[in-house]
Image 1 (spheres, one colour):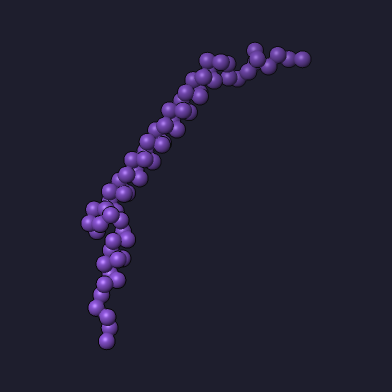
Image 2 (image 1 turned 90 degrees about the horizontal axis):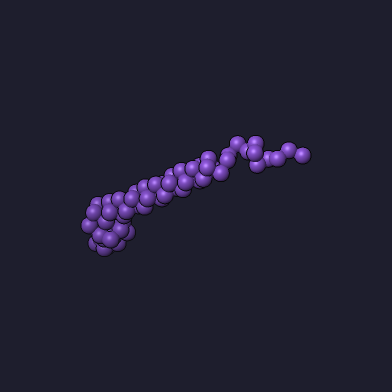
Length: 67
């Protein structure tokens, strides 16, 4: 029976480096996602001057009734 540990493609050092690079990538993706969420929230609040896009919809409900 062959010993897989000696012929493994990922030796311990290579595997640890792979895992650390993958973890850094996940952290950068998460921080980018958080940044984009904050930008979107900021854009929605500054566009209509309200807390969200719903503020525009509530203003449009107060039109004069049609006679």
